[in-house]
Length: 201
Image (cartoon, rainbow, N blue to C red; front, side, top):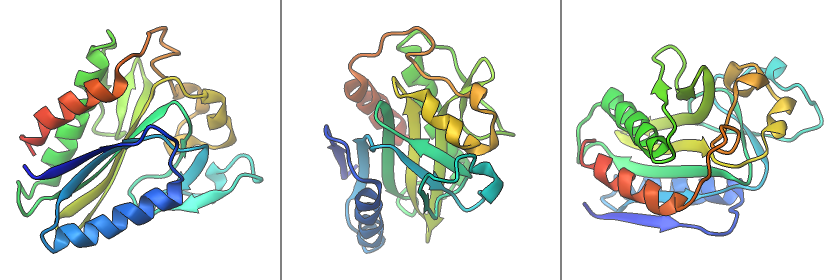
């Protein structure tokens, strides 16, 4: 697999990241290298294609519109973002399989920290005791899949109180830190599991 695996240690502006991602999508459509990118954003609220205005509880916050799937969500320091650009023309043209492997990646990652989690076909994402710990949002253009997923590691969950995240009550959001688990080697562990599961996509 000819995939660029990029890890950013400093916070990356959301707009700049999406611009980079969309340029890579165009390159991949022309046969360019696929991408997996691990990063974190400064506090940013984004709205997917299914969001509703009443999901914004604090009208003073700035909302960035996104072409990803899903509703309104939060990105902030301590939340790990995994963006990807994957050409399903070179793999299985199966979006359900792609989502399954993303879910498996997150579940396997959380097991490292002794966290038992699960997926839910009715509510996309990964859950721990009915609380959401990871969000998934993808878009597919000409069988090139992009955007990705986020996992709450040790981010400030109070920032969620300004929105109805992914259509949920704010109390239904959790993180590795809130579950009382210590997080270490995040990038290393995520990279290992992502590379393993990419072969199944």
